[in-house]
Image 1 (spheres, rainbow, N blue to C red):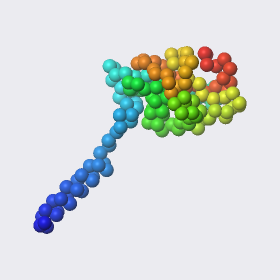
Image 2: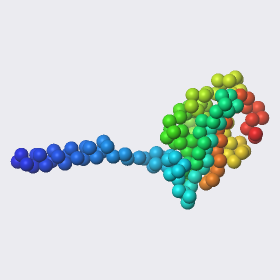
Image 3: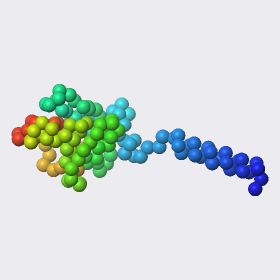
Image 4: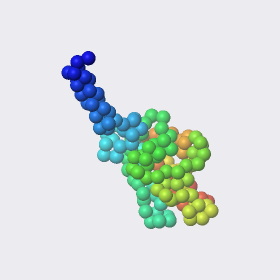
Length: 153
């Protein structure tokens, strides 16, 4: 092999390495977790709100996010929270319970405190890993200090 060939192969390898390292390649999950301004009008979306105002006076997140076919409430929430840089803690397998969002954990404010979720104002009778939202649904995760009677508020 001649010196010119070696230089050509080395240069091509350097260009390929640079492309792999510096091109921002996203998985479909990362792509569809874009901020609401990136969701087109004809795209499938849900509104997600994380509300901890009952205990610490704040709403952690509120916005419109892309919905991928087959997503559960958990799938879209986990993707969005990861994208927004908000920690998420869970319990269970596919029968998932979201036990913490943004460092606010279940039992932080008593034995019956924790996160509940509603879809369009109603608490579904299945866990968020099984519930499949539809385009336009409003999903709200609310931190409550007592589960009794809170789910249907």
